[in-house]
Length: 271
Image (cartoon, rainbow, N blue to C red):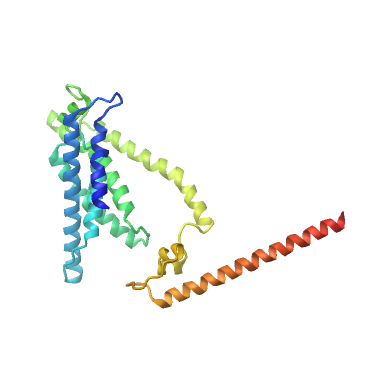
């Protein structure tokens, strides 16, 4: 799955080189694809080996966790997406390395806060994507901007490159920060009421027993023959709870039907 996403990212980032008129810029496509490869690969390596070092220090035994490499790769790809056509390859390596560390930090933070994110979507897309927006304002090079926009002398460039002009220019970096704040505010404004309603109606998370046995059991009827964390006792407890719910549901519906029939008889008698 990770390699499929990585391969698709080449079309995603490389395809951004096509402008609204359909004009094709081979140099921008090549830059975007190379930077995507470097950032994703670097982030995967950094996440894998940083987690290896942390695990070895905490447990005394090294453990290579491939999931950190895969999600680290996706975090690096998310981070380079915003700037893939306007940064240099060395910048893509730096962006990917920082994305790998941010992914690890955000993933461990969610565990500390007891927030369930089974596929680490928040560390990959929120942390990686936010860093990518900021990185564009820091690493956008004059050469990359000139090549991408077709202008001879870009007025505003990345903050780090602006020091080479004799004075810092934070205009592009400031625009990126404002854009990031707007994105966070817009998403929060739209989605917060939605999640409040889900929580109010009890639809925001699964039942505690469903969390133990897994949604494959509760939603798809799968009975695991072998599982590391699920015991037959858990399965039996969930089965009993399901039977009680169904029995209560049938009893409640039959009571409503009896009440409706009584109401209809009362109306007929009144008429």
